[in-house]
Image (cartoon, rainbow, N blue to C red; front, side, top):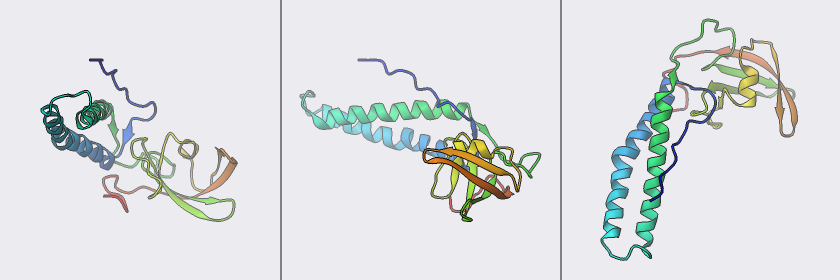
Length: 175
């Protein structure tokens, strides 16, 4: 049986909101307490059927078990190295981790983004990673600062219209 190589955390920020850390812990708990035991039972039942060489349920179950174990190792290592940020920065007039930022593009349209860690980014509610090109460009900016972001289609310019911080333990539109 081949040894599975260790899973390392992705490069980048180790910052996370309390909400993001909670979601990762819940995923770890679900995988370890619910999904893994269920897959183990299915693999045991499939193995009891005899010939494993042509047993699709057994093969799939073993593969799924490896995927779960890999994700569990990743989550444990990632959570051990995380820095949970649960308050606003010393200078709330600048963009830092956890900020909600309203940007105005060249065409006058406005978008609202929250600066989060790489484990939390989700474009539907406007969560962007602080390690993304836009996230990096926004860090330490103030209201009325211009930001230029290099995108695949060329550079784009934005104006920082508003910066706000709220309790990092809750967020609009996310549960």
